[in-house]
Length: 209
Image (cartoon, rainbow, N blue to C red; front, side, top):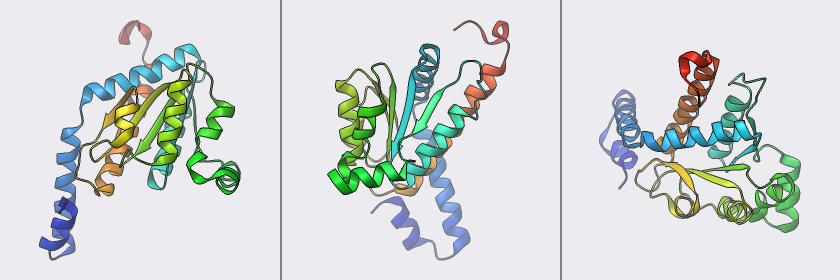
């Protein structure tokens, strides 16, 4: 039984369930390794310096997070003179449905990378389970073709945690999609807030990079 199932069984009223959920979410946040966050931010900053593209992708709730992340980094950072060239592979419905219809859903991200990705680009996969076949295939393609791969995962990390070159893992019991996706969105705002406010500070204040 995961913690959400336990809460549903033991908390009889909405207020008690809500408090239990939020308390548990705080526990999950405590498990995130800040050194992984720092490494991820460093990878994004390096991509910006090199002019490399940054591709986000995910399914379902993670597709929404991929879009949110790409927007917050590309537009929200307000780094106009040297932008973060971030976009989400989950956004082009025409491409996704054409690929899924013609060649299968497992290829919806890999085929887009075959067209858009160059060696040295950054590919960020978001998946609570870490085992979504279309995301795993895309990361395997990216690894084989010179990209820098990163994964935002939950549960035990799954295959994505194993094959990605870096990432941020949110350890939980299997099936706890809500807390994992909550933390992934928090990480979006941690990362994008850092990029917005630190890049806006004068070079002599924040130090040379």
